Each structure stands twice: as structure tokens, then as C-alpha cells.
Image (tube, rainbow, N blue to C red; front, side, top):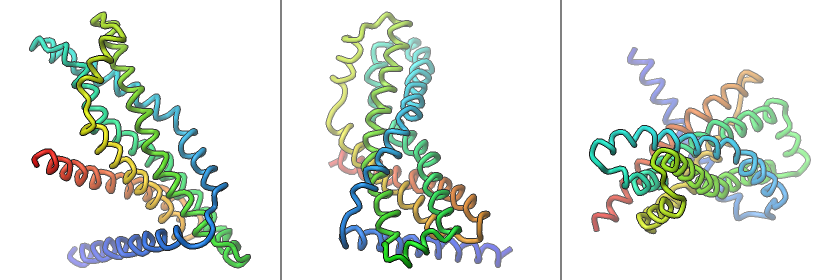
Length: 258
């Protein structure tokens, strides 16, 4: 039992060390040589545009469900008028960024792990190295940058759709007009709500791209490893997202206390 725990701990520490070196290599390659602009735009399209429907649908359902669940409780206290403020602040500060990031971790992170893992086991990456192409620059740097840039845009889109879904509930249940609802939403929001949520979205996107590419690029054990790379990319990214979210909330609270 003790040996199994020691082995698991050692494997975990080795994984962190390898991921650290992988991150260091990314920043080194980022500022070294020509930038693969065409591949970067392709990945932005794949990560951003092709995720709009899933993120929008998820955000819309979150807005509906969150408002439907909150409304009866607030009605008991006569605080239904606070729904626009409460829902918008909750979604923009916390729910929108983390849910969108988890959705993208499942879709984008696993896709990167499977795609790069398949290229690794079929020796396509080795062929690129032999031909003189820099596969790390072409495959990894472009994907991580695209994920870092696209996730904040997806979060903004998902937040907007979620707030609109909340408005629909209030419109049909409370006969609240569009102007009245969103006037209260924008009155309650401050830059202190928007800026931290946007900043941490960049870190979420970086984590998704980094872990997905790392798992795929270092894939081993043949075709079985491809599935393991895709699965572990989602698991590792999800845990890392919660850790980053905790750090972001903790730092934000420190600034609020000052």
C-alpha cells in the first residue's frame, strides 16, 4: 500500500516536472523563428467558431435553469426585483467562465490530445522533424495561442447568451421588459466584475491548450495511448481549471479587501 502511494506520488511529481519543461519549451519556441500565422488562424477557427453552438446552448440553458431555480426562493423574501443583478453578476463573475472552460476542456482539450497523439503514434511528428519542419512550433504553439485567445471570446459570448436566457424567464414569468431587465443588469455590473473574469479566462484557455497539447505530443504506447491522452487531457485540465479558479478568486478578494 505504501509503495503504491509512493509510486503514485512520484509519477505525479514527474508529470508536473515534464509539464513544466513543456511550458518552458513553449515560451522559448514562441519567440524563436517565424510565426505560423496561417495555422494559427486555422486553429482559431476550429477552437472558436466551431465551439460557438455548444457554448451558446450551454450558456442559454444555464441562464434558464439558474433563474428558474432562484426565482421561488427570492419570491419568498419579496426580492424578485434583484434577479437581474444577482444572475448577471453570478454568471459573469464565476459561473460563465468556469462552465465555458470545462465545456472547452472536454471538446477542445480532448481533441488536441487525440489529434496530436494520433500524429505521434503514426510517426507524422517524427516525419516533420526529419523533413526540417519544427513540429512543436507548427502544432503546439499555434494551438495553445489559439486556445488562449479564443476562450475569453467564448466566455463573453456564453455570458451574453446566459443573461438573455435569464431575461426570457423573467419576461414570461414576471412580464419584465427587455429595457428594464438589461438596464438593471448594466447598472449592477462594474469593471471589478468584468476585468478579473476576463483575465482569468485567458489563463483558462492557456491551461486547456497546454495540457491538451502536452498529453498528445508526449503520447506513447500506440493507439491505446491516444485514448489515454484524450481522456487524461480532460481530467488534468478540469482539475487545473478549478485550481486556477480558486487562485483567481483568492487574489480578487485580496484586492477587494484593500
